[in-house]
Image 1: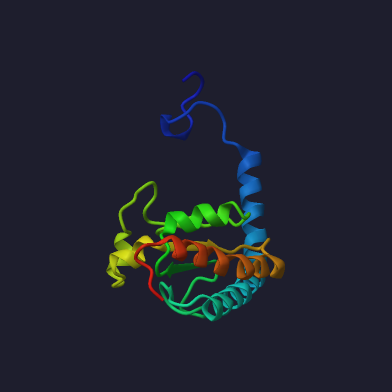
Image 2: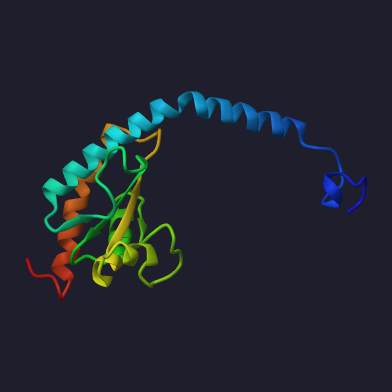
Length: 165
């Protein structure tokens, strides 16, 4: 490092004033839009869960129902008879991005300790996927998932030697 001893000797140079001001403005904008964005995501989340539950048999919601006890920005669901990685890959080929497992476990094939802690058996934990929602998602996005997901689940279940309806 060359220069002064700013930042307690961790780095030389002056503070990134423009970056600091920009972060403050971004925080103000986020605070101002938080309630509207949360309401938007909550509406989409409820529609997504109700549509999936109605169209895919033996689907399990991991965690509380959409509402005040659940974050509005995701659904973690387990599809009995359809492994999570398979769902991820099949949905990805149809333009739908999801994550498999739990946000607490990345690059791992073992079941999430969080899903195990809520009492999910290992087969359902391995079939878990996470659908995330944000301010840019639309009703059309939800309609696409509601049209695509049941077909993907049926295709994977048809290939599964352990699936019995």
